[in-house]
Image 1 (spheres, protein in one colour):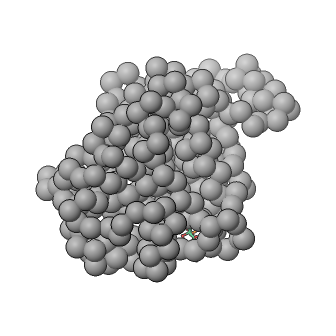
Image 2 (cartoon, rainbow, N blue to C red; image 1 turned 90 degrees about the vertical axis):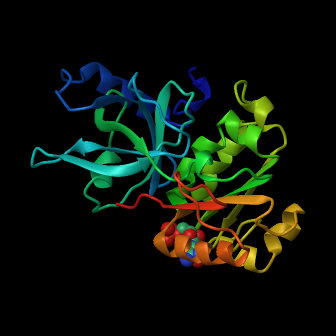
Length: 286
Ligand code: A2P
């Protein structure tokens, strides 16, 4: 299935023309190992971008997993980092969401990719942010900071998520409002999505907050849980191990603080081999 809606819609005309000329003038494909071709790139802020690449025919993955992707290093060795696959498992292409670190070994170069360019993608998906690592429950909480939303961009587009849970609550926190755009646009597109819309229905609740720029909802996820504000705002009872399951993806400090909060509610950490009530993974940082 191809998702037409995910094209780089906002690219200005000049940028699109540049992208086209890049394709037309592209040199003959280099012999990269595990090469995949970039199909679109979208820059969300000066710190964030998303891109889509061709999907190897043989690649099967579970929503929420990550793969190693990268570019050939100057020393002739592949320079690879772990990236969550942001697209759902039924998508024909693969989507990734990345930070741009000015002096980051990979992202300082990766941020300049254009449609037609090739990246390296090792087709060996792994990860703990998968539905199978959680015991059955009624509500699924997805807690993300920054680019930690990437695996959840896959999970909220997976029909199985809505088959397993009555309610899915996505909390995403960034410093500034513009950094929420990728997630907000995705969530807003889902009810009307011809492929996934009817599964989503009204089950997905979205709770975005900023911490450094004024916006309608503010505060760290940790603080909004501890104060009970999020439960009051969305009108749900507090998290309990009987009904609630959770996935956490953000910085080390965020993951650490979230673990303590979830354990405080009585949830236990699960794994593929030993499903329980919550799972955690570190977001990619270059
Ligand atoms: P804050 O602005 O209060 O530091 P970053 O851009 O540094 O990766 O942070 C992304 C978001 O995660 C920011 O809104 C930041 O809030 C928040 N954050 C960082 N550390 C924690 C933490 N330990 N617990 C909760 N939120 C955090």
